[in-house]
Image 1: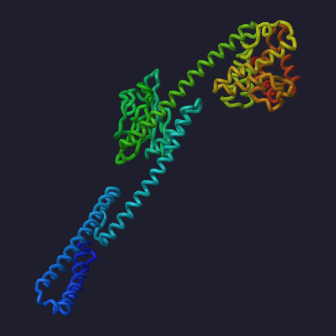
Image 2: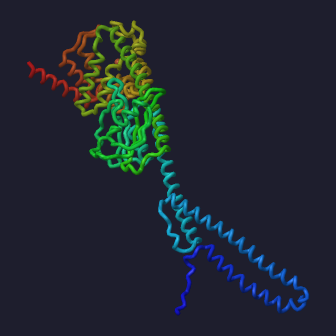
Image 3: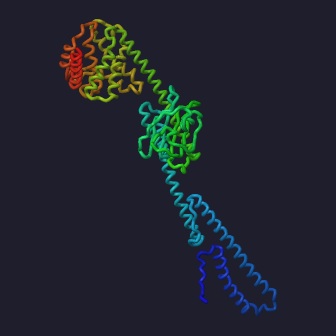
Length: 484
Ligand SMILES: [Fe+2]
């Protein structure tokens, strides 16, 4: 009969310990008993009770030792069990208990839990960085007066990434039509998402806007205003953007796999971000309203100044129009043209601070009066400066009487030290003044005014600006001759 070697490798830890304990205690016990019988017993053979007491005592000691050891091993087994449960909860995989004993398994499980924790810590660190960046962007947006569209796009992207989403949209309610309109959207695939409008109550976004309640669930991304050509169920989270009790829009994030549903924590995070976005948008709108009102007031002031002098009726608008034509001929962008149109309209607004007896004087001004009159660009700048969107216009108003050779006012700037837009405004202003009647002189003909511009090249005027204006005037003449 072959001898079978029994492997203890796959046995439970407590069985192994029991066997080991039995083996380890059996031989010492025999030795102790043998020694006792050989050396001690002859002296105490009369005392049978002492022998019995010694044997029973030894057996009880071994049993107590075994019991204590077993309890200790039981605790280790419990730790192994608990670690296995935690590992399963984290990783979802069952561990193979047959591979090595419980101590090995405990070591492996702890290693695995440690790896999971490290992974989670890395994820948390990355989320923390993202949320920090996001809050900083929202903070910038809250105090932003311009360029909020770009900021909202960045906020949308970072919000979606922080929430592990592949798409996101921010929709605002168009007050007049009572419809939701996509203000900005983002996709991790960098695909173009055809934005669409939605009625209140329509789709997930429409329902959230109508009911003022967040929705977390499953649906198509088109239900939150995103049309990407794919028609499939996705995990969606959509929260309202509220200002006090009024909803101004919704913000949504989309995960492409429905298995990755959004949690309550995700909803709470998006709701917090949403309330900050709503404040930023509201602030921006309030700022716009304030600026619009201020601009209207300033424009009314400029018109009031113009109305004082019948000779200058329509001058400001014409200066703005000429300046835009020159800028166009020089290849300027839309922002510059808008600035010049506003600059033309407002360039003499500072005259509101000049006394009427000087402003409307028909004869030549005295040196003192001239000095007072020369303050109007600086007064104009002071009026426009508080409007952030007009800060650049304020710069050209300040410099619209500077001359290319440095002989102008208020600062005597020379050449390119004068902003190009101000150099353009100077040419447009002077030309319009020359071709209109003034109390102290008759208007010049267009040809005479052009001659004056040519004579002033490099002195009063920037030659490249005059060249551009001459091209504009030549084209106008040509068009006029064709029309005739
Ligand atoms: Fe002026």
